[in-house]
Length: 625
Ligand SMILES: [Zn+2]
Image 1 (cartoon, rainbow, N blue to C red):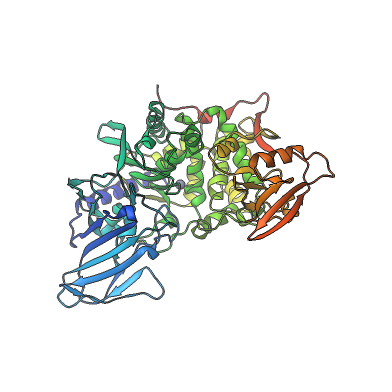
Image 2: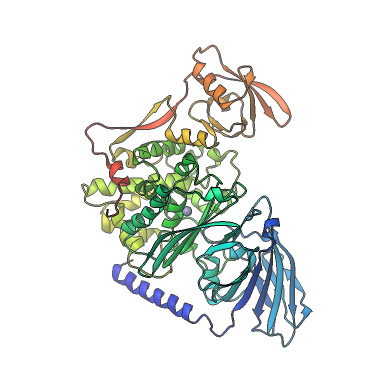
């Protein structure tokens, strides 16, 4: 895209956004939506909608299926129950489409001007969105919308009824609270689905910025007040995050940003990006256990960076007019891969993690990708194309199948390499920061989307630094690559080496109850219960006959413990003495001998003497003191 044409496009699109916002009361009256969340503590939401009728013939209502940011048809249709549609006080029969199961057909009675729609949203243990003290409202889960118009042209006037006394956070505008009912301003379906709401019994609001018409805050909710005890030092790190993102991108595409955050062990970790908010979910001790915050430091930085990279700039083939048409996910290696690099970079620049640990982090992810046997058959781009099903694939055999995590993790190595190449080719004169300002920053705008293609990415990089970028991406993303791109390590003055000392991130994992890493010795990781999710093909464990789902119950005649397995690996120096395991598959016990005598192995980076330390430059804060 040429800069002049791009600028025109931005202003035209911004004007259209503002016009759409101003004409929220167009020809069609808005749909009134009321979500009764008073029974959220027992995992059920009650929904009523008043849908204007503009046709005398058949009508179709959709339940949103393809959810932006989730990159898959993840709308929980199994949670829709007790659907009633009425007009003029009488029931209207509906039928489900036999092929598109999130589609409902009906014919309003003659003369009806509106439909009264009601249904329940059932929350289940496999997809928890509430606890006795917290509820997460993703509006796409609690509405039906009429077919035939794009999501930007359908208006909603949303309301929520909260459990007594609960507080809430959301980027939705114009909240008016009356006791426990909150009415919001009329907005498009597009903005409503982009504006989740968190509410809870115990909330904490932390203002990070309130300046010149812009505001930015964290709205956190926990199961217990003490879980909200973020230290002043970490509050400062979140404030630094706002300054670092400003310095990185040079412009904003939000006006009032809300980091929504739940702190509970009852809802799994997750982060979903939006234009002016993010839906972040972390463990109860995320803010109060230093190892948790360090290990998961990129959660808020990653989702925040998406306001630029992913929401404002978005792959053209991810953009669809409504939530029923499939997204094509091939460019997620840019959307998510670049963002994984930026989220981590911002976490280091903001001070959440000491910059001295960055080489350890890179060694960890490089080894993880390099040891994945699935890479011998599957190019990185295929993990992005297959994302809609890979996101739901089990952990078993993830190294053989490859996973949705790969276009994040290996994508990060690709984009670190791009950064390192720009820095090397320009002799330190330019960096990926210059690309980001030109491609994702541009100029301040309200929330809007500027689409891109692979060619646009290549052309924008070419303007920052002439190089065969197309050939680079072809080799490392689109073709089968035996190893991940290593330019980002080689060109930054470092090299990979192996020792028996655990990598810092393995220590953090074990400290926070995650898996213990034996991947580069025996060929698997295991939790404190001895359960194995995945076994690397060709590893000593695989050769000995161990597969996923096996549970280790004893090591060298003693009850399994992670410490005991570490000791057995360290002690197994005699080539004639294997490591003896007793393992359990379903209800069958058996003994397994693993012949391995190389000791614990962990990846690290070490400095190459004489070269500049470019990793230090990459993680150095940019903000003005
Ligand atoms: Zn992401």
